[in-house]
Length: 183
Image (cartoon, rainbow, N blue to C red; front, side, top):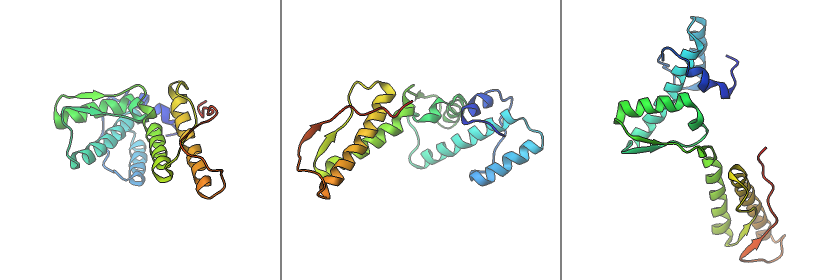
């Protein structure tokens, strides 16, 4: 289809119908999409069907783990995709009734923040030493990138210390401001 990732949602939002995409395997889904295009189906309809299939797969996995009650929180970059959010709302309503769906405008940073938290925990629990890099006022995206960068740098420092390459230190060390990895 030669469409950028950022274009998928806006194109799917123009769909006039949402066809059922049967394949959940990406290889077979790709073949099914090509077949549908060859049969003359509109690409916005195909993309809407693909968004529904992906969200249906996610809801299916969630239902096997106990389902959803009262409210649902959607995080990550896909939460910025209006077509995915639309299909999520539809599927939640079909399967669970009306409910609150929480989507933060900053949800795209959830994965980076979680990764930084895991790395930080590894430094603290495995080494008993915490080296802090970065700063608290780095701004929204810069703060998360700085946290991930700082946790990675702290882990490297702790690993080199364990290997006997660093001088003895303990406690918390204040370090220079981490550079932001964002553009």
